[in-house]
Length: 327
Image (cartoon, rainbow, N blue to C red):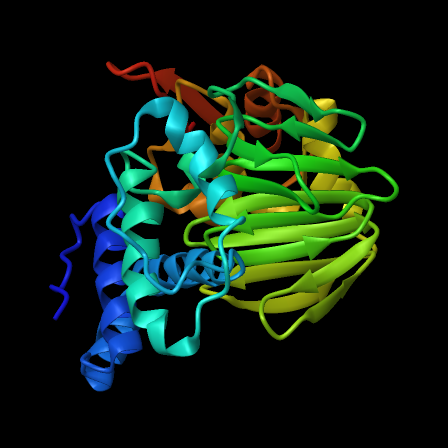
């Protein structure tokens, strides 16, 4: 039976534990109640299991042979080609699915990736940004992706295109006649040509449809222009953001738009772009409400607005952080 995890368990460990649960459930040897207790104990558990189950679902489409031999050790070059080789194999009857599951998990989460994460091994290209940086990448004429601060993606050509959002925030432009599977820790979005904004939030992913549409998850929940879906552990809640889309896309012009949010929230958003963070030195300040449009490349304008509107003082502490206090 898979072991339990502690608050210090890494993402790699969680993937391995989730893989063990999936094998046990498929074989009929796992205690279902124990599994449900493990899954429900921590959102990270549910997200890890959804990721492993999604990888296994993808592997099921590869039509593996009846008998799956133990794979030999793979070198770096062979890892890129292994998924494509599997696609040429013959169908397997359901009776051998347990063998295929074990082999699939072994190949997908162990042999293919030193870190144990299927998406990192399968993706042919990657891009990332540091704090305060932005970047743009393209996949031929099919897709353009803008990366916001502290973001990382992996992508792979195909039909559909596959894009993994590992961390941070991106804007996607998908051109006509192409489809995209956007894989995130919250679940998988299936998108038609259009424009989208996706952002990782803790164990969830927030996707806003600026133009276009698509579906989410196994139940094919539909998404339309102007809607935002918050996906967590394979389930999504959807809201209509039709009148607030400018705020979602403001980062692409280097600005942060605030409309009466708490100072706590404002700082969490501004600090995404800053190496030296802004922190509250007086707890009473957290209740203040902040509005306006501010440049993300330099906090001076934002800090001046706080001084002018609320008579807030600023100072640097020994770590370089900017501390806010009352006058």
